[in-house]
Length: 310
Image (cartoon, rainbow, N blue to C red):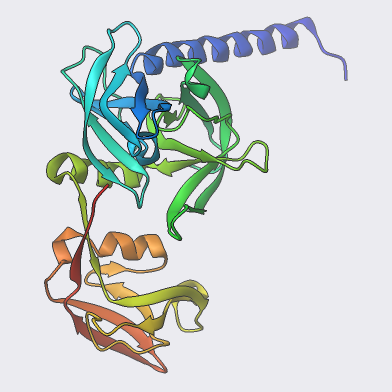
C-alpha cells in the first residue's frame, strides 16, 4: 500500500494532537499528586504516593502508611512539604485518608462510571520514592479481578492494567483520558511483567467518604463462610454459597444456602456482599434471600457490627 503525503500529514497531525492532549492531562493531574514519606517503626524510610481528594484530604493506600510513625510528610508539586495526619485506614480495601492543611491545587474527581475494559489509562505517582511527578500509559486490561493480600483476605473487583506501576506508585491515581480517577494504584505481580492493579473508583468513593466521616469502616457480618459456586437456579449460573455456619450466625442459615439478596441488594459476588453488609444494616433486622434446594427462602437476620480499624 502506497502512503501518500496527505495520509502521512493526517497521521502526524493526529499523533501531535494526541501528544498535546496527554501533555495537558499530565500537567493537570501531576499538580494534585503527592509524594508521601515517613519513618517506619523499624526506623526505615517509607514512601508512596497520594492524590488530592478535596482541599484538606489526600487518598493513598493503607499499606503505604500503616507502618509509618508520626510525623508523616507529604508534598505536592509547587508546594512546600507539609505534615499529614492519618484520618482513617481500611486494610480490607487497602485505602487510607490523610488530612493536611488546605491546599491550593485542584482536587481530582472520582469517576462515577468506573473503568472500561480496553480504555486508555495513566498511572501517576513517585516510583521507588525517587522519581516524583511521573506518569505511565497503558490500557485497562482486566476488570473485577480478585487481589489476595497477606492476611488471607482479598480486595475484590480490582482493575488490572499494563500501565507501569512500581513500588512508590502505590496510592497514586489511575486516571482516564479526561484526568478523572478510575482507580488507586495498589500492587504489581512481581513474577510478571505488565500486570498492575488498582482499587476501583466505586470502592474509593464509598470507603473514602466513610473514613473521612467516621475514621473507620463499619461492616456487618452474617456469621457464615461463603464461596462462589455453580448454582443452576441462580442468575448467571453462579452464586455465593454458604460453606460453614458459625455459632453466632445472624440467622438460621444452612450449609448449601445460595445467597441471592440482602435487603434490596442483589448479590452476585463477594464485593456485592461486602457492600450490602455495611453500616446501615449493622445490628438491624434485614431479610436475606437464599436458594435452598428447590425453594427461595427469606431469612430474617440481624447482622452484627464489625468495625474495621487500621
